[in-house]
Amino acid sequence: MMSYLDNNATTAVAPEVAEAMQPYLHQQYGNPSSAYRIGREAREAIARARAQVASLLGAHTDEICFTSCGTESDNAALRSALETQPERRRIVTTTVEHPAVLNFARRIEPKGYSVTYLPVDERGRLDMQALKDAVDNSTAIVSVMHANNETGVLFPIDEISTLCKERGAIFHTDAVQSIGKIPIDLKGMPVDMLSLSGHKLHAPKGIGVLFVRRGTPFESLIVGGHQEQGYRAGTENVASIVGLGMACELAANGLHKESARLAALRDRLEQGLISACRDTRINGDASCRLPNTTNISFGYIEGEAILMKLDAAGICASSGSACSSGSDGPSHVLRAMKVPAEFIRGSLRLSLGRYTTEKEIDAALAIVPGIVADLRRLSPWLPGRGASCFGKSAE
Ligand code: PLP
Image (tube, rainbow, N blue to C red):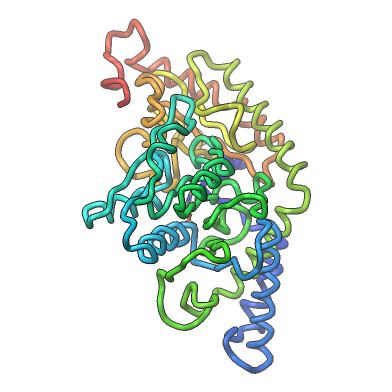
């Protein structure tokens, strides 16, 4: 049996989604820009999907632009804000954003833009005073994620978007991890742009959305034909768009009930691991985070070693962000939270999803404590073993 506890990395495509996509991979292959029947039908399918996405978000259909992924949506939002307001040359963001935002900001910094990276506290919460101090009339865009992919910690985008509106700055949120997991209603919130990604909510990989509120100045990242109302050129990925529409409809149905189910399973997993393993801590504000995510650190051992043993036991997890695995050193998110040196490398992200069962949680509870105990027996870093810790305390 496999326990898949890495739903923040990606999710399984829902059977209903795969079924809805099928016709558009076979007989319904028309180009949505074509005038004849199969073209018209593809166009109508996209319109239906747009309505399904808009309904989940509380948006108008003309505010939904399909993109190729969450990364593209983030890049498009930031690039557009800079291009449409050339007199404003500052980006305000956080130290814990996904690389889709952070690396964009780093790329444009040497080109005459200034970037403010807002700090978080040891529970991963944003310093709201620093945000207030940073946003001024030179700010083109404030980009703050809704939920952190590594810890699940939620940022108060309602409050932040209101502040940005008062200061005249465009507000973008990367909601890739929150959409489909917790309710959102953009009708009552002055968010100007929002990114989401299909593969985090049981649609395929390679499809995303950028929400652009009516009236927000916009320049497209990808130029060419007039698809997506001129917001994004390129022949539409019809099958994946249809799949994403279905995924949004599925997510909307029973969202509250599913959130509560996930939170209960996650809490059982977390509490079970804390009581079975000494020297363990939860990273992130436990009172304000996604219902499906726990980021847990086992002191004095390496997360990568835990992952390898978990893999051998059929458990899929992550020791940080899947998107940054392969990069050196501990996660930038945990470093920003100043997780103590003896804990920062032993972190494990366990993220649940719609298909997570109690059996999978039981399997993890049966296996993880033994792995932690085995690794600790070998660990030179345990207090009293002589070796100094994993280097200096995290910056
Ligand atoms: N933003 C966040 C918060 C994410 O977690 C991810 C993916 O892990 C992305 C953006 C990138 O989305 P995509 O994989 O669709 O490019």
